[in-house]
Amino acid sequence: MAELAEAAGITVRTLRFYRERKLIPPPRREGRIAWYNDHHLARLRTIAALLERGHTLGGIAELLTAFDNGRDVGEVLGLESPLISPWSEETPVRLTPEELADHFSGDVTAENLAASLDIGYLAVDGDEFVHVSRRLLDASTELVATGVPLAAVLAAGREVRTHVEAMAELFTTLVRTHVFADTLHRVAEGQPPTSEEIAAITETIEKLRPITKNVVEAELSMAMDRRVRAELEAWLGGGGGEGEAPTV
Image (cartoon, rainbow, N blue to C red; front, side):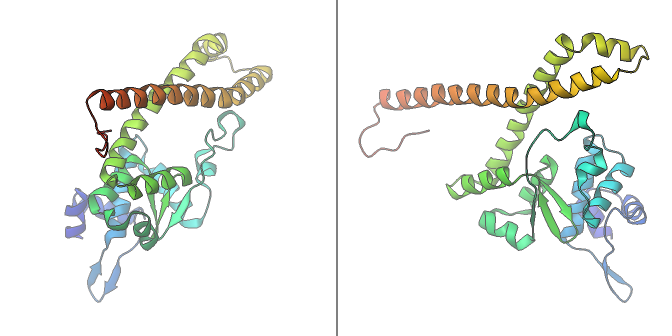
């Protein structure tokens, strides 16, 4: 227990508390000795990442219990509500440690695993991992296959997460400020929204889904055109001759 607590960066007292709350599975016992493994460490890092994002221990326990019992996490979070129906269409992927290693060859290090858990790409479910998105898993696998180190892919993913969070804030601010300002003002004063207002909010959210995707895809496509063109012009203008590889 002391070794696991040290590896996770927590106290033995905290680890014992997590065990009592059933946030981590019980260890394998041999007589009086309790053996912990990498799956216990990964789950502790998942807990730390969720705490850092503002989740309570009670909420984390409910999420982990949902995983263990095969329940849909969206159900636990209340995402069945029409007002906050899941925006993304991502499909989680369940992976054994061996299957995860097959995706990234020798790049599945303790550091990369910790980074994946911290970003939220991976979560621990018993003796398996759950990747948050099939599309992100496939993209990461392809990038690593082309020669990009997994650590660099994860670092880029962290930066992308920062940028898309900013874009999500931009879109929601636009709607909150210009579409629902009056409704939100009345709600803030203690007046519940009418059924018509709730229906209008739901309809607007559904309309925003394709609009935001189209805007982001169009802007990213044009930005990639500009960037690739500039890189190629810089390479060609810099005297890159036949047989020499570009620096991009």
